[in-house]
Figure 1 (cartoon, helix red, strand yellow):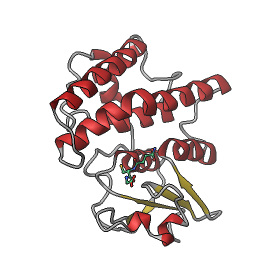
Figure 2 (cartoon, helix red, strand yellow; figure 1 turned 135 degrees about the vertical axis):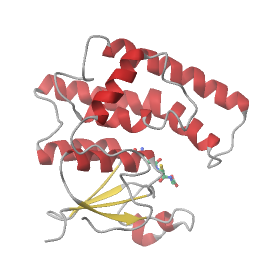
Figure 3 (tube, helix red, strand yellow; figure 1 turned 90 degrees about the vertical axis):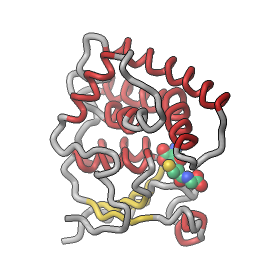
Figure 4 (cartoon, helix red, strand yellow; figure 1 turned 45 degrees about the vertical axis):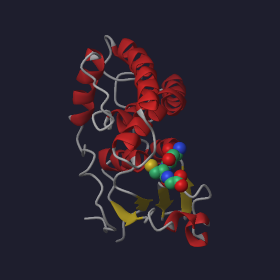
Length: 213
Ligand SMILES: N[C@@H](CCC(=O)N[C@@H](CS)C(=O)NCC(=O)O)C(=O)O
């Protein structure tokens, strides 16, 4: 039987990694489809008819034909539909959602963009890197304080808030943003990485299209 989910993306993409991580932690096999951004495949009509923003990731749920975009929204969908990592109560679900919005506003720009500059995917000089370093420090300080005395971002177990935020923090090293001065984050990272089904960046997603194992 073919896998229920088909993830379209690029293995180097943080938002694609987040969705792959969620599926892997939820124990859901998925077919993976490489999207050739270099050749502009994501801006072609066929792809745009499935992903209106012309970006990766795109998740297809073959059980109902849904074509889903925006990594945070996809995590919410998967939590709802699989009944996993959504939070134990309505309040936890609401808090998890607040962290998703916070992550994309405060954390992702600084870390993802610094990484893109460091890797040569994006233009930018020392001034920009310095600004992102300051913004990353502000966001990481908020998260580190929040995690003091807690195992997980929300409630007593891992939720999509942890998966979503981990999907950014996992790229901090490549962004040359050190985590050593955030001890609660360092401890939390280890907890996320110990979850069953965890796979690291660079390994979880294949560089090319690959059917589910
Ligand atoms: N907010 C989106 C961001 C997606 C995103 O930035 N994707 C990048 C790759 S990491 C992309 O598709 N870039 C090509 C483009 O925007 O044209 C999400 O979380 O899914």
